[in-house]
Image (tube, rainbow, N blue to C red; front, side, top):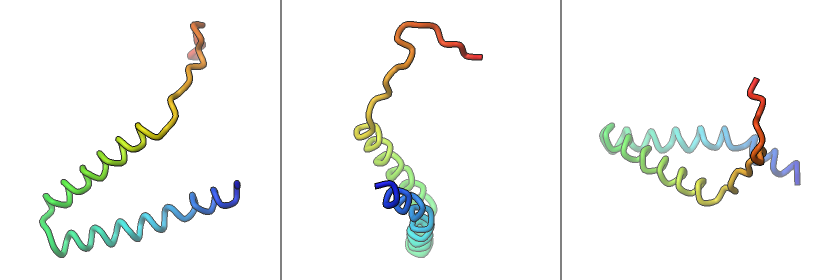
Length: 70
């Protein structure tokens, strides 16, 4: 399970760079800069809501005790 997880993690940067470059190129060819900014904001909103809904909640490690911040 570890090897496929690392493979997907390692492949995410080049795939993201390719897809991002493709999307940016298409927007530059077909639309104005304002629509690219609107698209980026919409994608960011969708990803933020999806992560908020899908990620597990953080469990407090404090349990009512004081943390030593230093």
